Amino acid sequence: MLNTIIFDLDGTLLDTLADLAASVNFALRTHHLPERTTSEIRQFLGNGIRYLMEKSVGGAVSGDAFEEVFQTFRSHYVDHCLDTTAPYPGIMNALNELKAKGYKMAIVSNKLHPAVQELNERFFKGYITSAVGESATVRRKPNPDAVLAALRELGSEESEAVYVGDSEVDLLTAKNAGLPCILVTWGFRDESFLRTLHLLPNTQFAHNADELLQIVTH
Image (cartoon, rainbow, N blue to C red; front, side):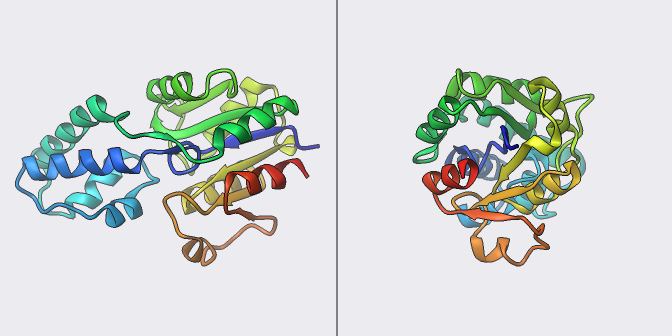
């Protein structure tokens, strides 16, 4: 019986795109590199911030020069990561309903573990009791490490859980962890793209938070 929901963070629960895009372009501008559109940056998200900056730089610099750009991005994002970041519409109501129905919930993210815990504390305290990010012992998604760690913390089995995400990385993470997947269409990937992936047989799509709630609870 389904009693546990494992959520991706960026693009699923939190709309972080504008703050990430602002920091990416601040770093590119600072180092006299061409800036990226928000649409481009959106496509680069889902594999962690180093991958994001590698794609944003596009091979224009490498080695130590890239590390300088990357560190400029990181410093700016630390200071500005909450300028506009907020839960997507309807998410807090959905979490409230899920909590009321007794579901156990966790976040898994490719952000570093302390950042994931801090964001969970800020936005989802009282609803989500496990928040797992990349660390020395937890590999980045699509490795299943974070999902499995979250299930252990929640005391849940794979057979009791569903994974909710917004990208191809999330689909692979669910597959690697042995969980069914719900893909949301409001995040960092368009539904048209998501439907081109090698979907799991039981993959479902949610177009808004109310629909997600219905899928999970019915």
